[in-house]
Image (cartoon, rainbow, N blue to C red):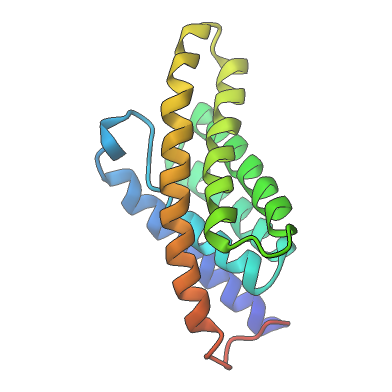
Length: 167
């Protein structure tokens, strides 16, 4: 058990590093606010490798720590809303028998943006920005699929490594 906690800590640290590096990159497709979401690779891997509790903890701890270290209240709200809705969607889609990790991750990408649109609707009193939503959803499908592909490749490698505790 204590080894799994240590590995989860490594996942949080890696997620924070990826999150920070991604914040330094220019906008994805020149669309303000759209990022590739590489930190979600670690959440997807944890969801499939350990389970929903561990994946949710990694996701939540990363969001909180990044918000405290580098964020502000509004950015934290967007990140939390996107992270939670993304996780819930991936958890529910993973339960569908035979659905590949790429589709589960794409659902996470879509719902990450849905969560951010919902929190934006609460925080911003101007509804005209909702016309931006189709671009966000298309981007969520694309970026979520890339994250899913990377996650699938890593998961196939992890199955051959016996030293990482699953329990």
